[in-house]
Length: 408
Image (cartoon, rainbow, N blue to C red):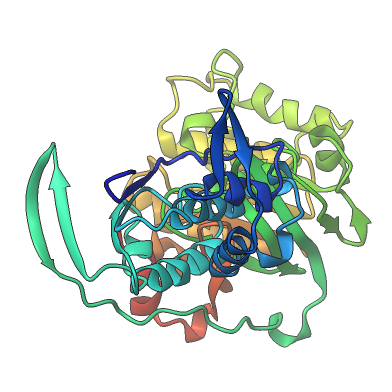
């Protein structure tokens, strides 16, 4: 630091019990002296002016009196950058500065870095190519297995969220999600998500891995609690404070992805479906389930484990969820581990379920675009923080544009 180098690690390191002002103040190089082995601070007009100037740069001028412990994860990242800036380094080295940030925070961080580079040299270590593509770097160097493999001048492409559409045809709202936020520790996965699903509508939520799709699905069914506030409403009933089993009884059906389909391997196909019936107090398997999935009727006495293919297990997982008579069916990555020739059949089955089961709505999280184009009525693209950055009706969808959001 004395040589003009400032370094920020991936996890923010700020003084939680101090205010934003005090964090910046203790970082000011001329703001204190050593007296008798202790630090003595001099809150001069120079120090106050420097703190306020940096606070404005890092978007925290209105939070100077707020304890750092009450800041969001992204704000803590900005504060730590400010603690470096106030020391006036020539070079700032930032290790994954947007890790755990929402899309909105990531965009503001891009703006912050552009401000900083007017007076400082900045070296950013990052694997989030969407962030790098947001007009951050002048030059990009790619490393692989500790070796430099590519260098070049960066020409950022123009990006920006699309305006959101209303529900098609004025459809009645079956599922409403408002200001929904989920975090794992200090990492914000979904922040202030707003989502509406119409009655008898299939909505596909698409995005690259790590964008929060699975977290969204698990939180809607109550497996992952929200981090703060927000509201989840199903057909006019507030589910926000209900546990998972209560949400199932209220009308939420959930089909996990391949790695967690929760098929009971030692139970038969029939017994697996009956576990779904038990959740809502019923005993007899509806005949229409076997009409939807004839192979399950043929195999009803086989065990659900290794005796079924991946596609057959997926059909069983969907049938078990449908046995609870849901109003909304949530499917997380339904094509994962499924043979390509079976994927089209699953898309057709979902549309048949939508048409034949009394106004049932379906939400699918997915990244296989061909499946989405076969199955969905409406397509939502999410990025970090669960922010919806693009939305289209399937009939009007620009596949190339959607594919660009899914590209790694």
